[in-house]
View 1 (cartoon, helix red, strand yellow):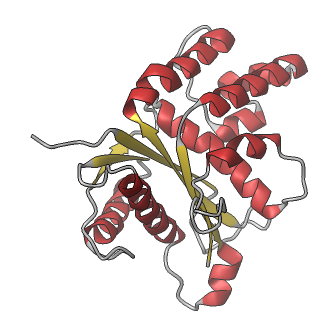
View 2 (cartoon, one colour):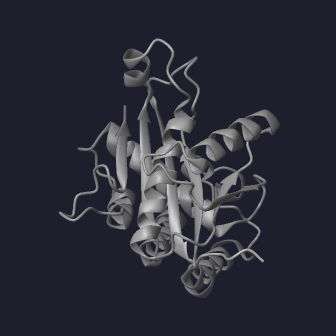
Length: 246
């Protein structure tokens, strides 16, 4: 029987990884890995988000999606009411702030990437390698690096998933900064899967991207997210919980 660690990791992104057409308004790709102790996840994180859904929607079938929330579309059309929107965003921020997890994020600036190389690597693969390597470092600091840790990602399509799995296995087997086989198991979840961890990873990624693009702009959501980043010995997040590439 496989020996699993006490932790689980959920990854989701903001922006797209295509280099063919770069959106001038959001020319980046952000991949965030949220690392939870399983006991915390089941005991407090999931119940808090379920309570939020019951409060605003009456049921727990709503999938919290950053883009739909921002556009107030689908079930989030209730947010067209200013007071409901204010209350909902406050509740989301409270739930994220209360959630005990460690955050590791890679920001790929696609403008810099295309200037840096005539044949740049896939932004998703670059971001994934950083997240996988940093998650391992974090788990090693917790003495949880020898058991298997599942890493949950969202399905994107048969070919994309096959490419992602190949890239993941290449990094996890030995092509990483540690030069070691890393004990991770990739788990693909359907887009309709109502996973709290995936939804939380989605919710934190967009404000991180917005802060990178315009750090002077008020961004309350980023202020909630920022304390979650892994930090180095000096307290810095750069290169530890947050990395801009290239």
